[in-house]
Length: 243
Ligand code: APR
Image (cartoon, rainbow, N blue to C red; front, top):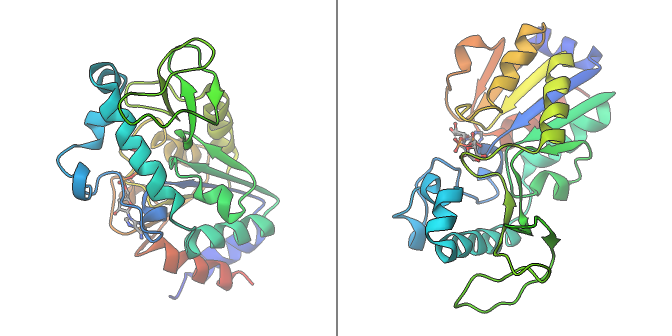
């Protein structure tokens, strides 16, 4: 791919880069994106109908089973070339912040260091009542496992629709976006707030905005550079062009 020389020049001298990623970055690892239709057993459910406090109250076992299935799917996949290209980009940049909406932990597994997981991590489990994180739980398949401390129901340590984002991560993400010289939006449909607002915060503070996504998004008309294709192909080429 031929990248505009202006972008390459700017990238090689920039000191502060912020990258926001979404489910598209993990698509080439074999994980379906959030707004794709789901596979097999879960095809008749919309994620929005499972990833909410109301869904958990209504049918905790259904929600627990969906996340158990997602955890298993994630355990079987590896980071892809896009994740690894972001690890390489981080090594070249003085201040590099990777903000992700993904709960699959693949950026950290690839080796990215300064990662803000805005929506939590599906591999972590905590008590729905007292919040205690737990690494182990019984595998009774009939009911949702309970907290050893308070007997509350266990749930994934992720942010559900209608819930607040972790405050420290959100504050760090907003201040990094405001300071960014270049802001990348990669593999995200940009429709879920407040993550989607980060690109606008960066732009309002003078950052160059670059989008890498399989298809145009609501952000596309506002960006300085848009590359439409697979992040696992475009990102390695971009990082190569920097050397
Ligand atoms: N490379 C780049 N982009 C891709 C690829 C790929 N290989 N495959 C798909 N995409 C794009 C899609 O075209 C889509 O625009 O990635 C985007 C994924 O969008 P969503 O499925 O909406 O995922 P995301 O933006 O991460 O969703 C945000 O919504 O429901 C919540 O909490 C959930 O974190 C999630 C948030």
